[in-house]
Each structure stands twice: as C-alpha cells, then as structure tokens.
Image 1 (cartoon, one colour):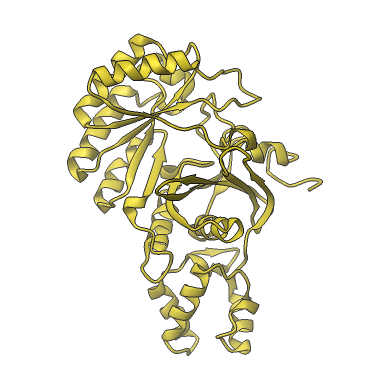
Image 2: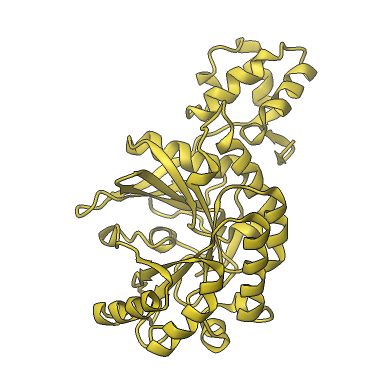
Length: 355
C-alpha cells in the first residue's frame, strides 16, 4: 500500500488492495468496489462517501489521506477552447494540466512530477528543478478533476506535462493501472501517450509490461552536439544509444514510436538536420511530430519561421517519413507546461504566495 506521513494514500490503491484494507477493518469486500468507483467519479472527501457508515468514515479518516486538488487558476483560450489549470496539491505544491479539444475527443496533458530535474534548455517546467514525484492518485486526480471542472469528457491522456514520467516509473505504472481499470476511468492504453526525454535505462522495463500505449520520445535534435546543448539527458547517453534503445523497444513491442521535435529558430531547423533526422527514424517506421516552439519568457529561444517548418517538413516527407506539424493550441493561455506554475508561485519550492 502507498502511504504518506504514515497515512495510506487510499486513492492510489487498486480494488484488490482496497478489499484487503476493508477485510482488515472487518468490512465486507463489496466496500472496495463502492469506494473505487466513487474515487473514479471525483470523490475528494470522506463526507462524500455516504454509502459508508459514519463510524467507518471516521476510522478511515484517521488512517488514510483523501483530498481533492484545488483549482487555483483556470484559463480558457479564446481561439481554440484549450483549458489550462493550475492545481494546488495537499502539501501546497502546484502542477498544471491542459485540456485540448480535437475532432476525435478531448485530451488531457498531465504532469508526473512537481518541477523537473532534466534541465532542458527551452522548457519552463525545469526552472527551479524537481521538488518531488507525484503519487498515482495525484496523477489520476489530474485526469478526473480536469474533466470535472472543465465539463469536457476526457477520452485521451498524454503524460507530457511537468516532469519526466520515466523518472517516476513505479508511480506512473500504478497510475496507468488505475486509469485503465474497467471499474474506474477505463481509458484504454491505446488512448494514452507517455513522453520521455530519453531515460533509456527504463525502456526495457516499460517494454516488459507490453502496454499498448504510445511511447513519445522528446528528441528535438538528431545530433549529439545540438541535443546535448538543448537536453542534458543526452549527455552520457547520446543519440546513437537513444535510437538503439528505440529500435529495441519497437522490435520487442511492435508499437510505433513517436518523436517530438520542437522547432527552434537557428538551432535545430536546418535542412541538414532534417536529412539526418530522416535517416535515423525511417527504419523504425516512426512518426515525427514537429512542434512550433512555445516561447518561454525566461528562455532565449525563438520558434522557427513558418517557412523553415515547411522546408523541414518537406525534406522529411521526401524521405518517406511520417510527419505532422502540431496545431498550436492554447498559446494565449501559456499552454506550454510550466509557464503558468512559474507565473503563479512566489518561490522556487512552489509555496503559493498572494493567491
């Protein structure tokens, strides 16, 4: 069982673990199904669990932690309806989620950590470093309460917000189990994408689980010199090792990998880099998602021009690469993860001030 400060994090428990807990309390096993379904529906306090006797709720309150994240800020894009939330957690820390509308349904982009240790040079999430990992229940709540507060039914999830999911591996795997559970949110793995900056030491662990999710690799450069400058995670690993790990993952799982590539003016958008990228990804049958850079005030980088993006795209297509250019969503609400959090916290350790 997952615990924090000697209190059980009850929303991080599976139905089987909940059944064991209620058995220890001398309660019937059906209680587990009652509370699991209520948690999946957005229950955030013991008072809401009216199906349980009050004496049992009081006892559970002394043993377990149950809370709902507080929506500190909600921004809605006037151009495309993207909704961005800043959530205050039980300990005062903050994370962001973004709900994006597509033709096929609504996708929520969730965070996996408070802050990030990876230090990518163009990203707002890593400013101030990593504070802590999110628990499975906190990630689950990002999905549940983003839907509940926005009123938009969530059908897809991307773990592409603040933090590195593979640096919080065990909690992320437990979250995936919970959000996929048929008695809970029942969001299929094929509707979930997990994004990593390239923590290749965890690729085999992920492949062993044979999950039907999409592995998205934040690549952002096809050569070591550029990628190491942009992404410290490349140092000590290298692009060759990254692509070898991707190839192994693809062969073991049969799941096509998606490469995320932020287009940065004068840094990674040359024709030569497009040719090199094409030569590296073709054998994987991979998909390349070009992302016009979201400008971050604290960073010096600028997005590539439309002409540069078209040229880059054309080179990839002419080499037989499956490529798309991500539609820019929520630019008027700082939809790039980390920006709202940085604008709303008063210190590096994410303690809110004057909210």
